[in-house]
Picture 1 (cartoon, rainbow over the protein chains, first blue to last red):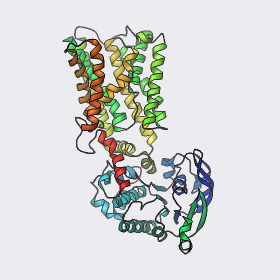
Picture 2: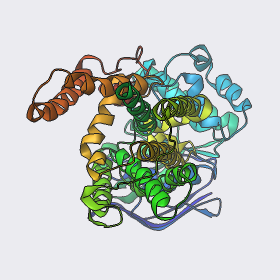
Picture 3: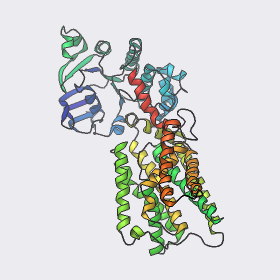
Picture 4: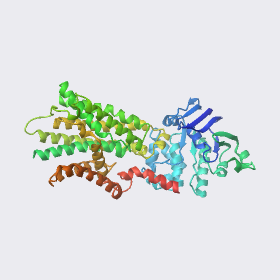
Length: 227
Length: 304
């Protein structure tokens, strides 16, 4: 379970996340939405300790998330997929997966290939040569190699063609249903993401302005006024 | 003959220096230019221990290398906070700071340099024996770096160089890798410095300044950054080229700046015409292309 109390995150004088308190279960499917600069990516990074200047408290499974210690926080069972730069372009697909799984059981590799058969076909290809959608699959597979209880994904569909967006989101749903891994999505593609998540949070100016069921957000007549 | 053997000693020392610099800069992507200061620390510490404490030269050489390894924290710790241009600036500050100290202490010989350093070996075949020794040390340095960058650890170094944030997101600790790379690379530089001091018996602060940083950078870039043999080729080329120029018989006022002009021209030429260096292969095979691969990859992805 994630517990967030009075979380505030700053970049110098700029307050990106402002006094946010939330809690959610590990297996949740949750979307975080908001316009550019609303603080949603910063909020996601705070959940894994990726922002240095923070106050308040974030805990996962009772363990505190320590700022600027991403590599340790991840090992608590949090998978993190950054928006860009989330695969290693100079390494092959299999080498990428080995980097991620080198602290874990080698059988994880087979599980990753079972989830994403395309990656097995491309195992000797350099990650930098793959298409955007394939790289996103690899990025998710990399995060899964750490055996997370919950996956944090920063705009997993950014820059992808609509057909590929559908594939990526379906893969995430499959991960949630088959492995029980929770999903926290930061997304600009609100309508597509609302099909996947069950709870939606909208941030504005770093504050939570909506927290409810995804259907409730979708039903709002003034939906786009929220962003 | 003695001249040729001395040039071969310099080549061997530069192979160790360039190979260790390649580990930090080429493979690790850590933009520190302070490498010559660890060369200096090895030379001065080993020389001072042998002069003032009468420590046997082989032991003082090892201690000198060890001190350089320990003092590498002076650069590896800033690298945990800053990277890229900022690390270059921090490393220049570290280099100039230590050189300033050496320049102003009496017991280091100050600007005049440290003299009367005991030599490692004596006798009629002194230089030949030293050449064989430095050849073995250089071969060990190349093999050690090749061994480090092979396998899982080498791939982890590449991944860290590609993207530190993504690397940390997989539960991997970039900090440990940086500290290890700086410690090993600096220790090797310290060993090269100690060997230099106990062969030439004389060192001065000006040998370890920014010009030496530029020379080492040129060796790595021209030979091929992030390649096994690149620094070796670069060191051989960039050590013999200035020696060859001396045979042109040009006045000293032209010779000195000419060396700098050659280094600058070579770096610029290779940056544009052959970023993989002389020994780098196709893309992903090393050289500056390996550094720029992730930047190009990000740009392409952002454009999609």
